[in-house]
Length: 135
Image (cartoon, rainbow, N blue to C red; front, side, top):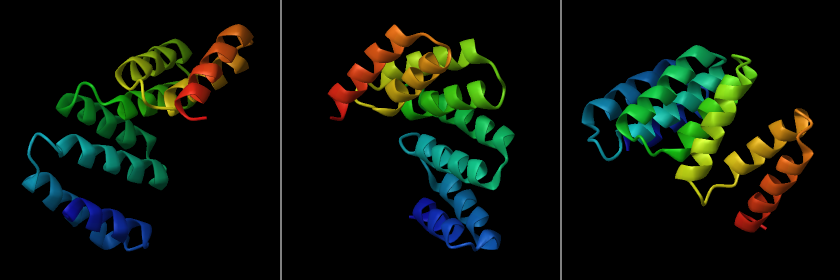
């Protein structure tokens, strides 16, 4: 409940109130939902333009749930775009594809970066997989 309230306050523009809701959510969270709270916080920091904090939140997601495919996907994108570390980012996207076989985003993102790197056959194969997941 505190997590959702914090998200609502943030997206409503009440920046002075959302942070205490997330603090409360983290205090009351158990191991089964702490990763999701950190994941939501990473999105807030991305929206605020603080990529460093978003990256740290995503790392905390993986500390709480080492199989969180969405976090691997977002870390991969941050590595590629902000840190200009294409190889590490692509590795993170591959891990996201392995952990979240049901997710469209890692396949699409990896295809996009393969295309930008002129690896057209790999991009084509990844797009086919993405379309199989979500036609």
